Image (cartoon, rainbow, N blue to C red; front, side):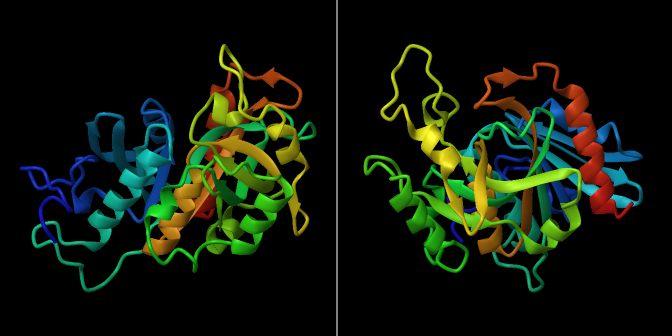
Length: 289
């Protein structure tokens, strides 16, 4: 593998994350906000590693005997493309030789995020577990052999029934990890189809000074169902997280705190207590406590 493909820093760390293979735990918590890393690790018993570069802040430590890495990704599927490829390189490529390691590691990756509901009956502060992610971003289309991880029947039904404008990126759909679905689902969670948008304003139907290409899109999205599962919320990362994780052989899931309801116009500006409860929930579920 040539140096321009797998870029390693002078100290031997991976290019963007500035992490070393030994820094990486098998259980990874992803957050968007770099400041939220310390919020997650405030629950830890011990912290053994702290690194940062740009928006990528990482800590590794222990929670109830289980080793976790917490990593901030910044916003968007473009950053998820960086994070997933570099996490996999840390786990499964010898950074010195550029060759795959003989025994592959499987990472368990959970994104703890914030989100906005598209349904009136999903109130603020709900724990929303994304059982399926539909991406409007196009990241997965730059990779080959995606057919085995995507849901083409859902994609076509979505395109036909919305109907999806030709000028937009072709949506792609990916399921959550079955293993993490079993671990994280409970009476405290609501599940559904999550939309990963390539922006916060126009791509999620928000209007400030610019008009939308399709001002009725959100109402049509809220009515869409596939095999009895409806679209529940918007966020900006899960489609690439689910798709790339599956292609690389890792397990991934997203669970978000609902901080806004787009149907009712409500918003929760004091979200820290909700996120703390969600962090505690996820850590306990993964640690089996």
